[in-house]
Length: 149
Image (cartoon, rainbow, N blue to C red; front, top):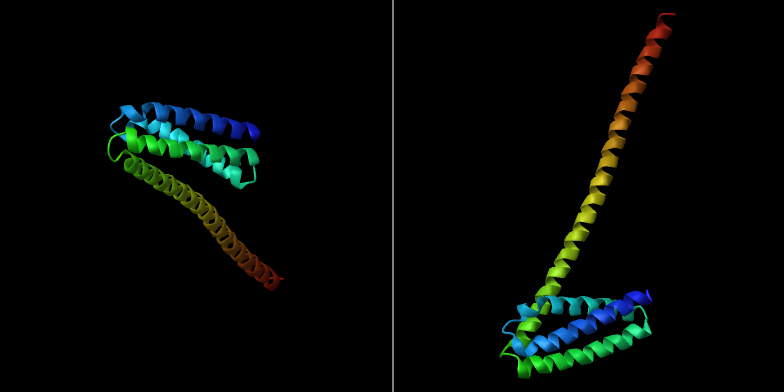
């Protein structure tokens, strides 16, 4: 668990370094896509660990927030006009895409669970019908065999 936090912190720091390096030389946020994705993923992992009470992750998250404030200043003053707003849109779209993917996965899981439940119900109904028909046939056979005696 601690190794995962350390790995996420390392990835976040590498991504922040790459974003800082690229900031003054780009025309579009899309050119920093992989680094921004790494930063967002690492920050999300660290936020989860910090929410679970991991003190090291909490302080790492504070460090990342401070570095993101530096990146914001670089985007605003060193990047092209509107770069920070494009970054904000990028992050918002990315969050929506991840949320919709999570919802699709949840819907798939629920659909699979419902299909299994429906299959079991159908199997139980068919088994009950066969049992009832078999009991009916056995009763008729018994009655016919008693009458003949």
